[in-house]
Length: 360
Image (cartoon, rainbow, N blue to C red; front, side, top):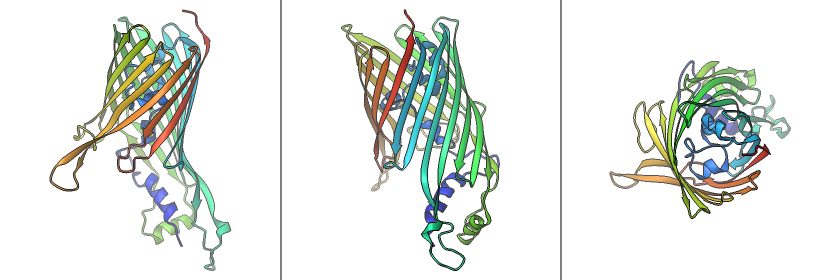
């Protein structure tokens, strides 16, 4: 009996879950990014972001929203359409010095065949006994930001609730906090955000029936137990500068540094426990209407197949955007999934609508 698809999927979700441990890449669906602008600029957003996607990149940017209400959405597909990634958000300018937002994210694989009962007790193959289930991760972000003294300084934070589900077999609830700040100085912008600052805890609960347990035992797989998965803090630093060229053209450049604390990673600056992953983004605009974007990220140091030396690789991303009467923004990004060896690029579209724009 072929139980491979089911066991592989269960292994991906469960293998890292032991009591109160902190595996690398926990809750990694929250590291994908939101908004085609940010993805086209290789996630270099911490300092310059100033719309409803600030709730994800740096909640301090919510104070820059000049509309009473912004609504945004995004849909993307990865791994040749197997995985679906969806995002939606609503942001409100509560007054001239503060803003708040609610965001929703889902990354999931649907219609996964469950072949556990493919063969009945009499040893006969019965395809009618195949069922399907979904494995999905959800995040709900509640964000608030406010301007503080000195002039140009704003701070913000996220309270996030995480729900992860693998069919009827397992689910987990988690809670975490993010805190960010931005500072404007003439044409310069600086930003910082601490993600999962108190660590984020996912409490897993498993509900395996006797048949599934038999499959685990027959295939010498460890039976997963209830436990807590910990996501350790991550710090992102950013600096951006903008220029105007002959009034009609503008340029914005940003560089970010993501500092992880969960041990050695295969990034440009790899260490234990701290690793540093840089991202660089560039945006060109014509009268704030048409935007061209590009970025470089996912820098990695890889040992050469032949010889005793290392090679350096990077991931380029590109995109465009259109802002129609400062009310409707449509953005597009061509971005990789992050695996240099596979290089499956995905088309990402995002939409933002401004409602009841305030007069200046």
